[in-house]
Length: 198
Ligand SMILES: C[S@@+](CC[C@H](N)C(=O)[O-])C[C@H]1O[C@@H](n2cnc3c(N)ncnc32)[C@H](O)[C@@H]1O
Image 1: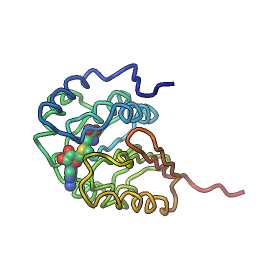
Image 2 (image 1 turned 90 degrees about the vertical axis):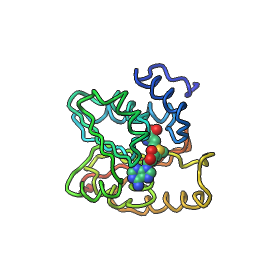
Image 3 (image 1 turned 90 degrees about the horizontal axis):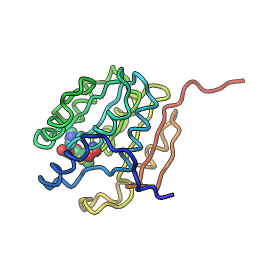
């Protein structure tokens, strides 16, 4: 099996990718991660989904492609220039809400909300504010992070933070986790329901 062969792309991806290249934004997620995001989103009919962060909307387009008509997606990013690309290509979708703001501020303001799927792709909600992000997961909710394998665009000093993050996540009680050394390197984290007692 050749897993880089993706047989169906969301229609917005071509335009988003071209605009991303034109503005030399090098933090776009990869297609295999997108296909996984769509698959996870499809497992949450009517779900509340959170993306930290939007970038130019690559992950956003894949999440929307997997979501049903009743699901909603909140996507957050501080950079209005990159978000403008996502808004241009995806802004007509009424299931999507853009938040041009700091992810940490969003997480704190969302403390009373619950999400069925969180894709955390920037510092807040991943390397900082991890507890705040995990606390928003509904039982059965999925938290997904990528870029855990060495990436060309990692800033200096980033590499040692990754194993520490993985260890930190695995030490949280009440979650089931799996490491996936696939694509850019992922981790899936699911909030468990009530424990089984005989
Ligand atoms: C890896 S990129 C996101 C890529 C996107 N998820 C995708 O699928 O292509 C990380 C994004 O985080 C944003 N960002 C950085 N610091 C942030 C912060 N404190 N709050 C919100 N967004 C932030 C950057 O502007 C950048 O667009």
